[in-house]
View (cartoon, one colour):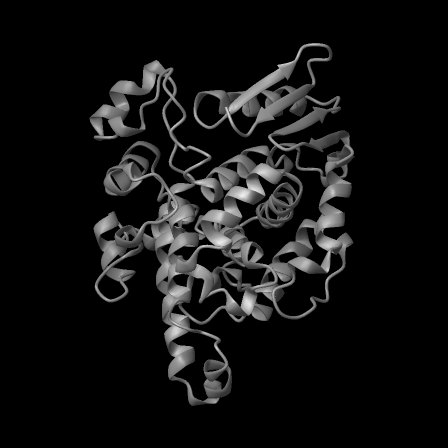
Length: 365
């Protein structure tokens, strides 16, 4: 496709009705650029998708009483991540082809996706993106949850479905994550004084969505929809896929020699990757790869001002994404440094030497 600035790309993607899951939403594209409107957009989207927050669920963090623990800028990041990821999926043939083969056309998920057959990836991507940072409700308000959630074992007990947690159902992410979740949770609490928002959010996401689905099936008022294929049990496989990505997305692979001893102390040696191969292989984990890529590329967390997104131009080809950073503020160097750091843990990134403000991201090394 022809190069386009990121603001225009997000607007065009949001205006394309193909990503709607069921019904039209009432928000306008311009609402995305007002951070204070983004929470309401997400809340409406949750309602239209049939997962409107129930009391006690993770999604309840959207309520006004808890809103202060997640900033408007974070909600804006969630939405931009969602639309940016859809844009990459729709414009990068290598990514789309791999995701379609591994998820959209996979017989393990086809039954669950019958009601979303016009946009199967958008449904999974919606679950991942709209929930991936909602665990900040717990990370940013540690004292409120410390008594009940002081270690990952307590979380597992409280988030079990049929006596198992999402950790027992990991899918779409490298196997080594399953072995180190308790240790990484412990590392974050003891070294940083935080509950990792990915681990907490993903474990609660799987539990809550499974419980909501089961309650919908039990409610006789939903009989017609249940008979028509809504809320079928196979959806829990999709919930597991989304929750697996959310649990693992904030677990940092160590690429610095000075951190090896610290990671070893917490039995996290599987995360050490000093000059080694990329551990999140695109060919094996395309959805998780795409999420790690987009969550890193999405710039609003750093530049804060959405009006500056028109200073970042995006160009797609089959295997390459190019970004030209035309910013004049100090954020430019921070963004480019962040993008180039992906060389050490995710994919091959090259700086175009002619202007030093263009980077090439190679999907397949």
